[in-house]
Image 1 (tube, rainbow, N blue to C red):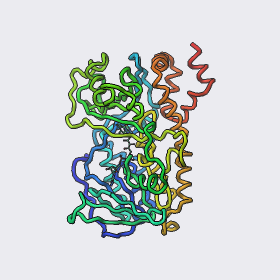
Image 2: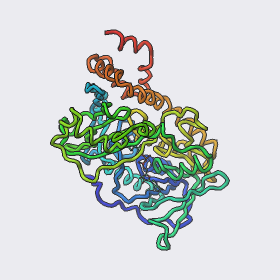
Image 3: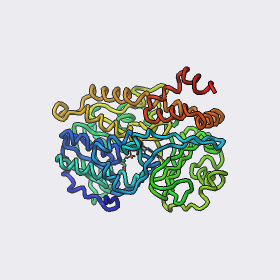
Image 4: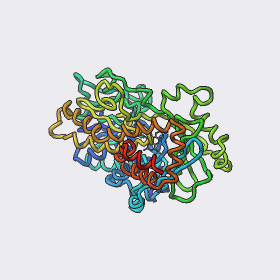
Length: 452
Ligand SMILES: Cc1cc2nc3c(=O)[nH]c(=O)nc-3n(C[C@H](O)[C@H](O)[C@H](O)COP(=O)(O)OP(=O)(O)OC[C@H]3O[C@@H](n4cnc5c(N)ncnc54)[C@H](O)[C@@H]3O)c2cc1C
Protein backbone atom coordinates (compact mmCIF):
# COMPACT_ATOMS: atom_id res chain seq x y z
CA UNK A 1 0.00 0.00 0.00
CA UNK A 2 1.13 3.55 -0.83
CA UNK A 3 2.18 5.55 2.17
CA UNK A 4 2.03 9.29 2.62
CA UNK A 5 3.44 9.55 6.10
CA UNK A 6 7.19 9.24 5.72
CA UNK A 7 9.66 11.83 4.47
CA UNK A 8 10.24 12.22 0.71
CA UNK A 9 13.87 11.94 -0.37
CA UNK A 10 14.50 14.80 -2.80
CA UNK A 11 18.24 14.20 -3.21
CA UNK A 12 21.09 16.71 -3.33
CA UNK A 13 20.66 20.47 -3.34
CA UNK A 14 22.07 21.95 -6.56
CA UNK A 15 25.07 24.28 -6.35
CA UNK A 16 24.47 27.94 -5.66
CA UNK A 17 24.12 29.82 -8.98
CA UNK A 18 22.97 26.77 -11.02
CA UNK A 19 20.96 27.38 -14.20
CA UNK A 20 17.77 25.51 -15.14
CA UNK A 21 15.33 25.65 -18.04
CA UNK A 22 12.46 26.05 -15.58
CA UNK A 23 12.23 26.90 -11.88
CA UNK A 24 8.91 26.16 -10.17
CA UNK A 25 8.26 27.95 -6.87
CA UNK A 26 5.77 25.96 -4.76
CA UNK A 27 5.18 22.22 -4.55
CA UNK A 28 1.38 22.16 -4.14
CA UNK A 29 -0.68 20.38 -6.83
CA UNK A 30 -0.22 23.18 -9.40
CA UNK A 31 3.55 23.41 -8.87
CA UNK A 32 4.06 19.64 -8.79
CA UNK A 33 2.05 19.31 -12.03
CA UNK A 34 3.83 22.24 -13.73
CA UNK A 35 7.22 20.74 -12.81
CA UNK A 36 6.12 17.31 -14.07
CA UNK A 37 4.66 18.51 -17.38
CA UNK A 38 7.71 20.62 -18.20
CA UNK A 39 10.11 17.81 -17.22
CA UNK A 40 8.11 15.41 -19.42
CA UNK A 41 8.74 17.93 -22.22
CA UNK A 42 12.48 17.40 -21.73
CA UNK A 43 13.20 20.46 -19.55
CA UNK A 44 15.73 20.56 -16.74
CA UNK A 45 13.47 21.69 -13.89
CA UNK A 46 14.11 22.90 -10.33
CA UNK A 47 11.05 22.38 -8.09
CA UNK A 48 11.20 24.27 -4.79
CA UNK A 49 8.89 23.85 -1.77
CA UNK A 50 9.02 25.83 1.49
CA UNK A 51 7.63 23.06 3.71
CA UNK A 52 8.96 19.58 4.41
CA UNK A 53 6.78 16.62 3.38
CA UNK A 54 4.34 15.42 4.52
CA UNK A 55 2.58 18.77 4.99
CA UNK A 56 -1.05 19.79 5.51
CA UNK A 57 -2.97 22.23 3.27
CA UNK A 58 -6.24 23.74 4.41
CA UNK A 59 -8.86 22.73 1.87
CA UNK A 60 -12.26 21.08 1.43
CA UNK A 61 -10.26 18.13 0.01
CA UNK A 62 -12.55 17.47 -2.98
CA UNK A 63 -10.68 16.49 -6.13
CA UNK A 64 -13.12 16.84 -9.03
CA UNK A 65 -13.29 15.21 -12.46
CA UNK A 66 -11.31 18.00 -14.12
CA UNK A 67 -8.38 17.29 -11.78
CA UNK A 68 -8.61 13.54 -12.20
CA UNK A 69 -7.82 13.70 -15.93
CA UNK A 70 -4.42 15.29 -15.07
CA UNK A 71 -3.91 13.13 -12.01
CA UNK A 72 -4.31 10.10 -14.29
CA UNK A 73 -2.06 11.50 -17.01
CA UNK A 74 0.71 12.07 -14.47
CA UNK A 75 0.41 8.55 -13.05
CA UNK A 76 -0.89 9.64 -9.63
CA UNK A 77 -4.38 8.14 -9.85
CA UNK A 78 -3.26 4.60 -9.03
CA UNK A 79 -1.28 5.97 -6.10
CA UNK A 80 -4.42 7.66 -4.72
CA UNK A 81 -6.49 4.55 -5.22
CA UNK A 82 -4.02 2.59 -3.11
CA UNK A 83 -4.70 4.88 -0.12
CA UNK A 84 -7.93 5.46 1.86
CA UNK A 85 -10.20 7.90 0.02
CA UNK A 86 -13.87 8.71 -0.56
CA UNK A 87 -15.48 8.39 -3.99
CA UNK A 88 -17.95 11.16 -4.71
CA UNK A 89 -21.08 10.10 -6.62
CA UNK A 90 -23.31 13.14 -5.98
CA UNK A 91 -23.56 16.60 -4.44
CA UNK A 92 -26.24 17.58 -1.95
CA UNK A 93 -27.17 21.28 -2.01
CA UNK A 94 -29.11 22.65 0.96
CA UNK A 95 -30.98 25.96 1.13
CA UNK A 96 -31.82 28.31 3.99
CA UNK A 97 -35.17 26.69 4.86
CA UNK A 98 -33.59 23.25 5.19
CA UNK A 99 -34.69 21.78 1.84
CA UNK A 100 -32.05 19.82 -0.04
CA UNK A 101 -31.50 18.54 -3.54
CA UNK A 102 -29.17 15.69 -4.40
CA UNK A 103 -27.49 16.11 -7.77
CA UNK A 104 -26.02 12.91 -9.14
CA UNK A 105 -22.66 13.09 -10.93
CA UNK A 106 -22.77 11.43 -14.36
CA UNK A 107 -23.06 7.68 -13.78
CA UNK A 108 -20.56 6.70 -16.50
CA UNK A 109 -17.92 9.02 -15.00
CA UNK A 110 -18.50 7.47 -11.58
CA UNK A 111 -18.15 3.96 -13.01
CA UNK A 112 -14.90 4.93 -14.75
CA UNK A 113 -13.73 6.30 -11.37
CA UNK A 114 -13.40 9.74 -12.97
CA UNK A 115 -16.28 11.61 -11.25
CA UNK A 116 -14.43 12.84 -8.20
CA UNK A 117 -12.62 11.86 -5.02
CA UNK A 118 -12.14 13.44 -1.69
CA UNK A 119 -9.11 12.73 0.46
CA UNK A 120 -6.99 14.85 2.81
CA UNK A 121 -4.58 17.17 1.01
CA UNK A 122 -1.91 15.81 3.35
CA UNK A 123 -2.25 12.66 1.24
CA UNK A 124 -3.10 14.05 -2.20
CA UNK A 125 -0.34 16.67 -2.29
CA UNK A 126 2.18 14.16 -0.97
CA UNK A 127 1.52 11.86 -3.92
CA UNK A 128 1.57 14.69 -6.47
CA UNK A 129 4.91 15.93 -5.07
CA UNK A 130 6.40 12.44 -4.82
CA UNK A 131 5.54 11.71 -8.43
CA UNK A 132 6.87 15.12 -9.52
CA UNK A 133 10.13 14.35 -7.70
CA UNK A 134 10.50 11.13 -9.75
CA UNK A 135 9.65 12.79 -13.07
CA UNK A 136 11.85 15.87 -12.47
CA UNK A 137 14.90 13.96 -11.26
CA UNK A 138 14.59 11.36 -14.06
CA UNK A 139 14.77 14.25 -16.54
CA UNK A 140 17.98 15.57 -14.94
CA UNK A 141 16.41 18.27 -12.75
CA UNK A 142 16.40 18.87 -9.00
CA UNK A 143 13.89 19.14 -6.17
CA UNK A 144 14.36 21.02 -2.91
CA UNK A 145 12.08 21.13 0.14
CA UNK A 146 12.30 23.25 3.29
CA UNK A 147 13.59 26.14 1.12
CA UNK A 148 11.82 29.49 1.42
CA UNK A 149 11.95 31.62 -1.74
CA UNK A 150 12.26 35.23 -0.62
CA UNK A 151 13.76 37.07 -3.58
CA UNK A 152 12.68 37.04 -7.22
CA UNK A 153 15.48 38.07 -9.58
CA UNK A 154 14.72 40.54 -12.35
CA UNK A 155 16.70 42.19 -15.14
CA UNK A 156 15.00 45.00 -17.03
CA UNK A 157 11.47 43.72 -16.39
CA UNK A 158 12.36 40.09 -17.14
CA UNK A 159 12.26 37.56 -14.30
CA UNK A 160 15.47 35.52 -14.32
CA UNK A 161 15.31 33.33 -11.22
CA UNK A 162 14.93 33.29 -7.46
CA UNK A 163 16.86 33.46 -4.20
CA UNK A 164 16.11 32.12 -0.75
CA UNK A 165 17.36 29.98 2.09
CA UNK A 166 16.70 26.97 4.29
CA UNK A 167 15.12 28.26 7.51
CA UNK A 168 15.72 31.81 8.73
CA UNK A 169 18.44 34.10 7.40
CA UNK A 170 21.69 33.42 9.29
CA UNK A 171 25.30 32.47 8.58
CA UNK A 172 24.18 28.85 8.99
CA UNK A 173 21.55 29.35 6.29
CA UNK A 174 23.22 31.32 3.53
CA UNK A 175 21.14 32.77 0.70
CA UNK A 176 21.28 30.65 -2.45
CA UNK A 177 20.29 31.85 -5.94
CA UNK A 178 19.17 29.86 -8.98
CA UNK A 179 18.37 31.17 -12.44
CA UNK A 180 16.21 29.93 -15.32
CA UNK A 181 14.78 30.88 -18.70
CA UNK A 182 11.29 30.48 -17.16
CA UNK A 183 10.22 30.87 -13.54
CA UNK A 184 6.79 29.46 -12.70
CA UNK A 185 4.94 31.01 -9.75
CA UNK A 186 3.03 28.24 -7.98
CA UNK A 187 3.32 29.44 -4.40
CA UNK A 188 -0.40 29.82 -3.67
CA UNK A 189 -2.30 33.03 -2.95
CA UNK A 190 0.74 34.79 -1.48
CA UNK A 191 3.22 33.53 -4.09
CA UNK A 192 6.37 35.69 -4.12
CA UNK A 193 6.74 35.27 -7.90
CA UNK A 194 3.17 36.42 -8.62
CA UNK A 195 3.59 39.34 -6.19
CA UNK A 196 6.78 40.42 -7.94
CA UNK A 197 5.13 40.21 -11.38
CA UNK A 198 1.81 41.86 -10.52
CA UNK A 199 2.76 44.46 -7.91
CA UNK A 200 6.50 44.79 -8.33
CA UNK A 201 6.91 44.98 -12.10
CA UNK A 202 3.46 46.15 -13.24
CA UNK A 203 2.20 48.08 -10.19
CA UNK A 204 -1.19 46.34 -10.36
CA UNK A 205 -3.20 45.12 -7.34
CA UNK A 206 -2.53 41.53 -6.32
CA UNK A 207 -5.59 41.12 -4.12
CA UNK A 208 -9.19 42.20 -4.30
CA UNK A 209 -11.45 41.52 -1.33
CA UNK A 210 -14.52 41.13 -3.55
CA UNK A 211 -12.76 38.20 -5.21
CA UNK A 212 -10.91 36.64 -2.28
CA UNK A 213 -12.67 34.20 0.00
CA UNK A 214 -11.93 33.22 3.59
CA UNK A 215 -12.14 29.49 4.35
CA UNK A 216 -12.15 27.60 7.66
CA UNK A 217 -11.74 23.84 8.00
CA UNK A 218 -12.00 21.15 10.69
CA UNK A 219 -11.98 17.33 10.53
CA UNK A 220 -14.70 15.47 12.43
CA UNK A 221 -15.30 11.79 13.18
CA UNK A 222 -18.71 10.19 13.59
CA UNK A 223 -20.93 12.78 11.83
CA UNK A 224 -24.23 11.07 11.00
CA UNK A 225 -25.56 10.86 7.45
CA UNK A 226 -22.43 9.36 5.88
CA UNK A 227 -21.94 5.66 5.33
CA UNK A 228 -19.15 3.75 3.63
CA UNK A 229 -16.50 4.99 1.26
CA UNK A 230 -18.65 6.47 -1.49
CA UNK A 231 -21.63 8.81 -1.64
CA UNK A 232 -22.41 12.53 -1.66
CA UNK A 233 -20.50 15.60 -0.56
CA UNK A 234 -22.72 18.36 0.86
CA UNK A 235 -22.84 22.15 0.39
CA UNK A 236 -25.39 24.10 2.47
CA UNK A 237 -26.48 27.71 2.01
CA UNK A 238 -28.02 28.01 5.45
CA UNK A 239 -29.48 30.81 7.53
CA UNK A 240 -26.74 32.35 9.65
CA UNK A 241 -24.02 31.45 7.14
CA UNK A 242 -25.32 33.04 3.90
CA UNK A 243 -23.69 34.81 2.01
CA UNK A 244 -21.17 32.10 2.85
CA UNK A 245 -21.67 28.34 2.71
CA UNK A 246 -21.15 25.37 4.98
CA UNK A 247 -19.70 22.15 3.60
CA UNK A 248 -19.42 18.54 4.72
CA UNK A 249 -17.02 16.51 2.60
CA UNK A 250 -16.28 12.94 3.76
CA UNK A 251 -12.61 12.11 3.13
CA UNK A 252 -12.69 8.44 4.08
CA UNK A 253 -14.96 6.15 6.02
CA UNK A 254 -15.88 7.84 9.32
CA UNK A 255 -13.99 11.13 8.75
CA UNK A 256 -15.54 14.33 7.38
CA UNK A 257 -13.96 17.63 6.34
CA UNK A 258 -16.27 20.34 7.70
CA UNK A 259 -15.89 24.00 6.81
CA UNK A 260 -17.24 27.42 5.98
CA UNK A 261 -16.30 29.82 3.20
CA UNK A 262 -17.26 33.47 2.69
CA UNK A 263 -16.03 36.21 0.36
CA UNK A 264 -13.79 38.55 2.37
CA UNK A 265 -15.70 41.75 1.52
CA UNK A 266 -18.93 40.05 2.71
CA UNK A 267 -17.20 38.82 5.85
CA UNK A 268 -16.24 42.40 6.65
CA UNK A 269 -19.94 43.39 6.62
CA UNK A 270 -20.83 40.77 9.27
CA UNK A 271 -21.31 41.76 12.88
CA UNK A 272 -20.79 40.02 16.22
CA UNK A 273 -19.87 36.33 16.25
CA UNK A 274 -20.57 36.06 12.50
CA UNK A 275 -17.37 38.00 11.83
CA UNK A 276 -15.40 34.84 12.68
CA UNK A 277 -15.84 31.80 10.46
CA UNK A 278 -14.69 29.61 13.32
CA UNK A 279 -17.43 30.94 15.63
CA UNK A 280 -19.97 30.68 12.84
CA UNK A 281 -19.06 27.03 12.36
CA UNK A 282 -19.34 26.32 16.07
CA UNK A 283 -22.82 27.88 16.01
CA UNK A 284 -23.90 25.62 13.09
CA UNK A 285 -22.58 22.49 14.79
CA UNK A 286 -23.96 23.27 18.24
CA UNK A 287 -27.15 25.22 17.54
CA UNK A 288 -28.50 24.65 14.04
CA UNK A 289 -31.58 22.40 14.36
CA UNK A 290 -30.49 19.98 11.61
CA UNK A 291 -26.74 19.93 12.13
CA UNK A 292 -26.68 19.76 15.93
CA UNK A 293 -28.47 16.42 15.56
CA UNK A 294 -25.99 15.17 12.98
CA UNK A 295 -23.03 16.20 15.16
CA UNK A 296 -24.41 15.01 18.48
CA UNK A 297 -22.15 11.92 18.65
CA UNK A 298 -19.30 13.40 16.60
CA UNK A 299 -15.78 14.22 17.79
CA UNK A 300 -13.44 16.88 16.37
CA UNK A 301 -9.96 15.83 15.22
CA UNK A 302 -7.79 18.01 17.45
CA UNK A 303 -5.35 20.28 15.66
CA UNK A 304 -7.42 20.36 12.46
CA UNK A 305 -9.00 23.79 13.14
CA UNK A 306 -7.40 26.09 10.56
CA UNK A 307 -8.20 28.89 8.12
CA UNK A 308 -6.77 29.97 4.77
CA UNK A 309 -7.82 32.07 1.75
CA UNK A 310 -9.12 31.26 -1.73
CA UNK A 311 -8.23 33.66 -4.58
CA UNK A 312 -11.23 33.45 -6.89
CA UNK A 313 -11.01 33.58 -10.66
CA UNK A 314 -14.15 35.68 -11.03
CA UNK A 315 -13.83 38.47 -13.61
CA UNK A 316 -12.72 41.80 -12.13
CA UNK A 317 -14.92 44.80 -12.95
CA UNK A 318 -12.22 47.09 -14.30
CA UNK A 319 -9.13 44.92 -14.65
CA UNK A 320 -5.98 47.00 -15.07
CA UNK A 321 -4.78 44.47 -17.68
CA UNK A 322 -5.71 40.79 -18.04
CA UNK A 323 -8.54 38.74 -16.47
CA UNK A 324 -8.77 37.67 -13.73
CA UNK A 325 -5.45 39.42 -13.22
CA UNK A 326 -2.01 39.47 -14.85
CA UNK A 327 -0.54 35.95 -14.69
CA UNK A 328 2.54 36.05 -16.93
CA UNK A 329 5.30 38.24 -18.30
CA UNK A 330 8.83 38.04 -19.67
CA UNK A 331 10.51 35.08 -17.95
CA UNK A 332 7.46 34.09 -15.92
CA UNK A 333 4.09 32.29 -15.84
CA UNK A 334 1.90 31.78 -12.77
CA UNK A 335 -0.40 28.83 -12.13
CA UNK A 336 -3.18 27.79 -9.73
CA UNK A 337 -3.83 30.04 -6.74
CA UNK A 338 -0.84 32.19 -7.70
CA UNK A 339 -2.87 33.05 -10.83
CA UNK A 340 -6.14 33.52 -8.85
CA UNK A 341 -8.06 30.70 -10.56
CA UNK A 342 -10.33 29.22 -7.87
CA UNK A 343 -13.92 28.60 -9.00
CA UNK A 344 -16.02 31.32 -7.30
CA UNK A 345 -19.08 29.08 -6.85
CA UNK A 346 -17.73 25.69 -5.79
CA UNK A 347 -14.44 26.85 -4.25
CA UNK A 348 -12.58 24.27 -6.35
CA UNK A 349 -9.08 25.35 -7.23
CA UNK A 350 -7.12 22.18 -7.86
CA UNK A 351 -8.66 21.52 -11.30
CA UNK A 352 -7.88 24.96 -12.71
CA UNK A 353 -4.45 24.77 -11.08
CA UNK A 354 -3.71 21.60 -13.04
CA UNK A 355 -5.14 23.02 -16.29
CA UNK A 356 -2.87 26.08 -15.99
CA UNK A 357 0.10 23.90 -15.03
CA UNK A 358 -0.22 21.85 -18.21
CA UNK A 359 -0.70 25.00 -20.28
CA UNK A 360 2.72 26.35 -19.23
CA UNK A 361 4.35 23.40 -21.00
CA UNK A 362 2.51 24.30 -24.21
CA UNK A 363 3.98 27.83 -24.24
CA UNK A 364 7.54 27.21 -23.05
CA UNK A 365 10.11 25.76 -25.43
CA UNK A 366 13.53 25.23 -23.87
CA UNK A 367 15.43 25.59 -27.13
CA UNK A 368 13.84 28.66 -28.68
CA UNK A 369 13.38 30.35 -25.27
CA UNK A 370 16.85 29.54 -23.91
CA UNK A 371 17.66 33.21 -23.40
CA UNK A 372 14.39 33.89 -21.61
CA UNK A 373 10.67 33.18 -21.98
CA UNK A 374 9.43 36.04 -24.18
CA UNK A 375 6.69 38.56 -23.37
CA UNK A 376 4.69 37.65 -26.56
CA UNK A 377 4.38 34.04 -25.38
CA UNK A 378 3.35 35.29 -21.95
CA UNK A 379 0.51 37.24 -23.52
CA UNK A 380 -0.59 34.19 -25.50
CA UNK A 381 -0.60 32.15 -22.29
CA UNK A 382 -2.80 34.72 -20.52
CA UNK A 383 -5.25 34.90 -23.41
CA UNK A 384 -5.41 31.12 -23.70
CA UNK A 385 -5.95 30.74 -19.95
CA UNK A 386 -8.90 33.17 -19.91
CA UNK A 387 -10.19 31.79 -23.22
CA UNK A 388 -10.23 28.30 -21.68
CA UNK A 389 -11.52 29.11 -18.19
CA UNK A 390 -13.16 32.53 -18.51
CA UNK A 391 -16.67 31.38 -19.43
CA UNK A 392 -17.06 28.91 -16.60
CA UNK A 393 -15.47 31.28 -14.08
CA UNK A 394 -17.90 34.02 -15.17
CA UNK A 395 -20.89 31.67 -14.90
CA UNK A 396 -19.76 30.48 -11.48
CA UNK A 397 -19.46 34.10 -10.37
CA UNK A 398 -23.11 34.67 -11.35
CA UNK A 399 -24.16 31.57 -9.43
CA UNK A 400 -22.21 32.78 -6.41
CA UNK A 401 -24.35 35.95 -6.43
CA UNK A 402 -27.63 34.06 -6.91
CA UNK A 403 -27.17 31.78 -3.91
CA UNK A 404 -27.24 34.86 -1.65
CA UNK A 405 -30.95 35.38 -2.45
CA UNK A 406 -32.45 33.15 0.22
CA UNK A 407 -36.00 33.03 -1.06
CA UNK A 408 -34.91 32.27 -4.60
CA UNK A 409 -32.61 29.51 -3.36
CA UNK A 410 -35.32 27.99 -1.13
CA UNK A 411 -37.65 27.92 -4.06
CA UNK A 412 -35.03 26.71 -6.55
CA UNK A 413 -33.77 23.89 -4.32
CA UNK A 414 -37.33 22.91 -3.40
CA UNK A 415 -38.37 22.81 -7.02
CA UNK A 416 -35.22 20.99 -8.18
CA UNK A 417 -35.79 18.25 -5.65
CA UNK A 418 -39.26 17.67 -7.12
CA UNK A 419 -38.65 18.27 -10.79
CA UNK A 420 -36.47 15.72 -12.54
CA UNK A 421 -35.62 18.03 -15.41
CA UNK A 422 -34.00 20.54 -13.09
CA UNK A 423 -32.07 17.82 -11.30
CA UNK A 424 -30.77 16.57 -14.66
CA UNK A 425 -29.81 20.10 -15.63
CA UNK A 426 -27.83 20.50 -12.42
CA UNK A 427 -26.04 17.20 -13.11
CA UNK A 428 -25.19 18.50 -16.59
CA UNK A 429 -23.91 21.74 -15.12
CA UNK A 430 -21.56 19.96 -12.82
CA UNK A 431 -20.32 17.61 -15.52
CA UNK A 432 -19.87 20.44 -17.98
CA UNK A 433 -19.53 23.94 -16.62
CA UNK A 434 -20.35 25.28 -20.06
CA UNK A 435 -23.84 23.94 -19.52
CA UNK A 436 -24.24 26.51 -16.75
CA UNK A 437 -25.09 28.87 -19.57
CA UNK A 438 -28.42 27.03 -19.81
CA UNK A 439 -29.38 28.61 -16.54
CA UNK A 440 -29.39 32.02 -18.12
CA UNK A 441 -31.27 31.02 -21.24
CA UNK A 442 -34.81 32.45 -21.31
CA UNK A 443 -36.18 29.27 -22.90
CA UNK A 444 -34.73 27.12 -20.13
CA UNK A 445 -36.09 29.41 -17.42
CA UNK A 446 -39.52 29.39 -19.00
CA UNK A 447 -39.62 25.65 -19.55
CA UNK A 448 -38.21 24.38 -16.28
CA UNK A 449 -39.13 27.02 -13.78
CA UNK A 450 -42.40 28.58 -14.88
CA UNK A 451 -44.08 25.51 -16.30
CA UNK A 452 -45.45 23.20 -13.59
C1 LIG B 1 -10.81 26.29 3.09
C2 LIG B 1 -10.54 25.92 1.65
C3 LIG B 1 -11.29 24.94 1.03
C4 LIG B 1 -11.02 24.55 -0.30
N1 LIG B 1 -11.69 23.49 -0.86
C5 LIG B 1 -11.32 23.03 -2.08
C6 LIG B 1 -11.86 21.82 -2.59
O1 LIG B 1 -12.63 21.10 -1.94
N2 LIG B 1 -11.45 21.41 -3.83
C7 LIG B 1 -10.56 22.13 -4.57
O2 LIG B 1 -10.25 21.73 -5.71
N3 LIG B 1 -10.01 23.26 -4.08
C8 LIG B 1 -10.35 23.72 -2.85
N4 LIG B 1 -9.74 24.84 -2.33
C9 LIG B 1 -8.77 25.57 -3.15
C10 LIG B 1 -7.46 24.79 -3.20
O3 LIG B 1 -7.01 24.53 -1.89
C11 LIG B 1 -6.41 25.59 -3.96
O4 LIG B 1 -6.97 26.10 -5.15
C12 LIG B 1 -5.21 24.72 -4.30
O5 LIG B 1 -4.53 24.35 -3.12
C13 LIG B 1 -4.27 25.45 -5.24
O6 LIG B 1 -3.09 24.71 -5.40
P1 LIG B 1 -1.72 25.46 -5.69
O7 LIG B 1 -0.72 24.37 -5.89
O8 LIG B 1 -1.92 26.49 -6.71
O9 LIG B 1 -1.40 26.26 -4.33
P2 LIG B 1 -1.15 25.70 -2.87
O10 LIG B 1 -1.89 24.44 -2.66
O11 LIG B 1 -1.41 26.84 -1.96
O12 LIG B 1 0.39 25.34 -2.84
C14 LIG B 1 1.36 26.34 -2.81
C15 LIG B 1 2.66 25.73 -2.32
O13 LIG B 1 3.69 26.69 -2.42
C16 LIG B 1 4.49 26.68 -1.25
N5 LIG B 1 5.09 27.99 -1.10
C17 LIG B 1 4.45 29.14 -0.77
N6 LIG B 1 5.33 30.15 -0.68
C18 LIG B 1 6.55 29.64 -0.95
C19 LIG B 1 7.85 30.19 -0.98
N7 LIG B 1 8.07 31.47 -0.69
N8 LIG B 1 8.89 29.38 -1.28
C20 LIG B 1 8.67 28.07 -1.56
N9 LIG B 1 7.46 27.50 -1.54
C21 LIG B 1 6.40 28.27 -1.24
C22 LIG B 1 3.50 26.33 -0.16
O14 LIG B 1 4.15 25.80 0.99
C23 LIG B 1 2.59 25.32 -0.85
O15 LIG B 1 3.04 24.00 -0.71
C24 LIG B 1 -10.00 25.23 -1.01
C25 LIG B 1 -9.24 26.22 -0.39
C26 LIG B 1 -9.49 26.57 0.94
C27 LIG B 1 -8.65 27.62 1.61
